[in-house]
Amino acid sequence: MGAEPDPGIILRAYQYTFPEKIKSVVYSGGEWIINGEDRSFAWARGRVLPLEKKDQWASFRPYSFEIYPGELFDPKDYSPEEAAEIRAQVAREEDYGSLDYENSFRAFLYGGGNRTELEAHLVRVRFLGRDATVHRDIRDALTRIDSALTRESAEDAELKRFMDSLAPIGAYNWREVRGGRGLSYHSWGLALDLQSRQGEGAVYWQWERERNRDWMFIPLARRWQPPEKVIRAFENEGFIWGGKWLFFDTMHFEYRPELHEINRLLAAREGDFRIVGPRNDAGIHHIIPQIIER
Image 1 (cartoon, rainbow, N blue to C red):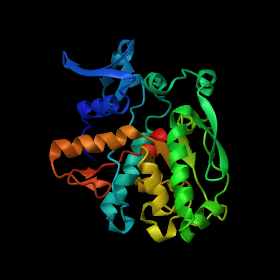
Image 2: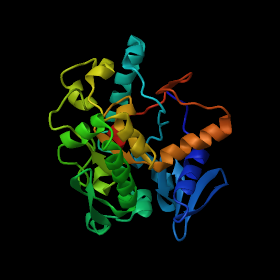
Image 3: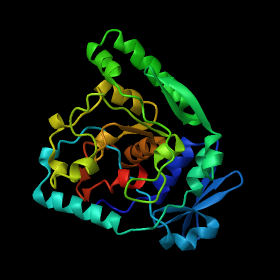
């Protein structure tokens, strides 16, 4: 396991990423507080909770704030001991059972305390030749990604084949995270699934886990993934790709600009800081983000 997340880094990453919504981050009386124009939240043992709920942290499932790797990690380098730790992480997450997330902070950032309110923030976009319903906050980013990839595909045969092979894009879908009660990023219109119509290779760790106890060792060559240009285009606009997660989901992209900002803040604090994979000297960085977030 990695070290306990630094709330100062995490909350400041949110402040720098959403400056129009978050006015300040302060440390007072032994607590980290993040302030909006008319709403404040407290860091409470891995949760970002409204002030009135900060002492009720045990009633809610914590979010993970993992380091997003700069490079794709090769699963052949995992040892049997690390595979056992990965399985233990799955078991620990499942132990949260019926605990749900407290979604007030995400509703503050993106609007929508319930499904009806959220759907007022949705828009229809044309993306890679297909229609998708997404949160309006990511419309412009998707337009830039679409323009860049469409332009490059005119001279890149691999990219053109990829775009032509795509199944309908999975975007907004009001549903809970698989295996839990929390809302998926798809439920906020902040995630997209890109998948080939041919269904080539391993895509999602939970699907593989159902038939292969050693799913974490599936070679990269047997995992389906988009071309590198697609991944970089998304990352340049604040998205992360699920194929870099230890608990891989190679069709999945979600809008998480705060994770990129966490990396930049860590780099500034630690000097020549380079993320090369999901592990550091302390152990494994990831805490199953897609169980928590997907």
